[in-house]
Length: 187
Image (cartoon, rainbow, N blue to C red; front, side):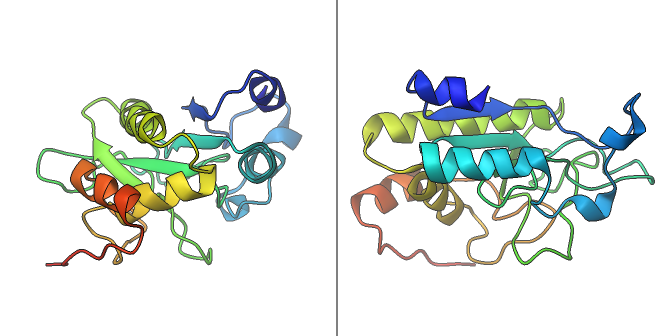
């Protein structure tokens, strides 16, 4: 699907699909320790970003309350994916929003957005934000676009495996598009 989308000139893809366990064919199941960017789906996302210049925005998943899983699902574990968790009303991690594994050398989820209805709602909100930024500056690569969104997060550069770098702020993203060397005060 990503190859076909690339052939159509698509630059952004949002996905709420996450693969974990529960497949009829047990060989298609994953374990939490496989959420390290090496699955076939994660590799496809890496290729889409690096070779086709597509930013894949992935929902982090709603597994945090399930003792048998808790973590993000593939393809959200792909290093190049922009994986989105969920906040509640108080800018705290929504109780259902999946955690990023602490054994990876990279942070997941990358950012978070408010949602009462799961990360399948927060991810398209951030994807829409990415579309607005891409509309403003279409020459941005997928990697540059992701970097701007990460750096615009309210917690940047102090992210965590619960909400990533936090909610991306439009004022910060616009400043970064104008001047990539912009630094923001952290509180």
